[in-house]
Length: 405
Ligand SMILES: *Cc1c(COP(=O)(O)O)cnc(C)c1O
Image 1 (cartoon, rainbow, N blue to C red):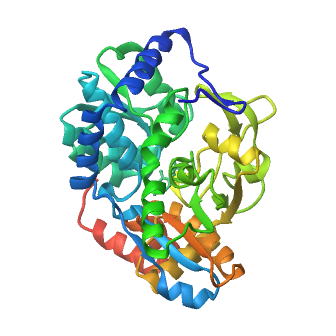
Image 2: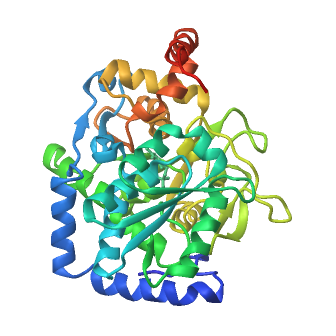
């Protein structure tokens, strides 16, 4: 396991959390490689999470774009609708092996919270999810789902009441109860050993792509494309190909423009080095180190930092970073729906938008794979309002008629 990726990563955390992180490090080294753990996780991934997910040949878009062959890795078909379950199941299972009674987690848009709540229900652990008050208001459907899975959603009212405040609240709670509780972190970031552990659980995406494309095409792909928030689906897609001659493209949220606050572009924008939430990486921040507000049409790509391994691989040039603007993202969402019958999550539609640019520029005998990190049912309140406002608002109004508040 690596504590640092180049100069990024590390474990910059107060004394109170050192023992909890040390206990986690020991558990990770002992439990994850064990045959019993691996067999149980594999069985859960197969019979509960729905793995392996398919690698689908995008026949119609391949014909239409007239460049490389295009394949789509369908993480959206995994239980709870996205790749997040790969990591949530893995960490909740470790918690169980460690003898913890309870798991705690932060969530922003609620996707990680839903995956953790579902995994906890499945494995019989108590679950508490910390969520900023503003996010609770914006993401009511996911709050509802978490509660249906039996989780307690704790509303965080400190600070700006969004994801970073939820992270702080979760860390504070963990410092108080780490003897009985396990902190399930949602992306490939945070203090060591989280980035390595999460990348490990998500590498199943790239490993399955590798096996399937070798079976189908008899060779490796030429380019892999994945969207990038904190970076867990991207590093999970890329990691098994780092040493191969494969172009790796991570796509960030270009938002509504290039000015500060209009996007969440870190590696292909103006982020600078910093130490936040226990690790060193690139962050969107002021000269004084104040974290900047971000914008993206997708709730999962507006994180102001990026996982340390991606930061390092981006810096060295091994991974290319691109951005996709909100408008292109909605266009790609419709292209893939109409040509391939797949409703992409808005996060994943950033990768789709990049694919629409990259594929036509490639030779006919090359292969591109885009990771659909999740399905877009969850985004209907955004997509329908953007693409069919009048009818959607009419529908929402009619739903509300007759209710008293
Ligand atoms: C959370 C989420 C993301 C962003 O997280 P990463 O850690 O960057 O993968 C991307 N896509 C979907 C569908 C998500 O739910």
